[in-house]
Image (spheres, rainbow, N blue to C red):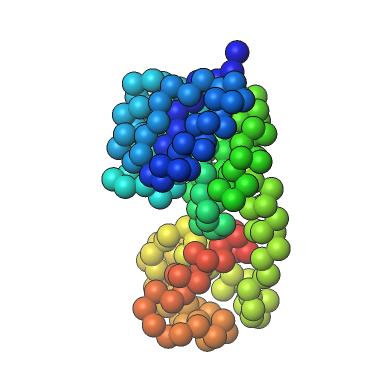
Length: 208
């Protein structure tokens, strides 16, 4: 028997297209939502096997809906559909144990494979996304950093403060700040607030 599914997207045409596609392929769609608030209410009420959520929705994003599901131990397996090929979003989905990540441009081509994989308990991430992330070039100047500076970057990627980095590396706050300053110069970043943090978030797959 095919899975029960709820779908959520704030674009009516996409929502109808998803519903028609799923119904035509024998899936049991038990509800549709046009925003994040409706989506979490449907998941609580219907307890579907699978919830297919758009990322950007009014009231609650797809990610915020997933976070609520995790807090409330709701068992539905989540598939995210999005236009975004984003490294931060990819890691966030991994962190939340999201089962599927499908790019909207390939949604109808990939959705059946994704659902089939998820039904077997296997995560499915769009091959186009994986290929895109793999082909991203290594950041310029990264090879110029010392092992200590790379370690500082790893701690920054884990959202640690200068004090926490100093304690982890057994160095003073002042030394941490000196390393950060040297890193900013080597990476040729603008000397503005949070420029290093932004760079780390954009390039963390090359650091961690």
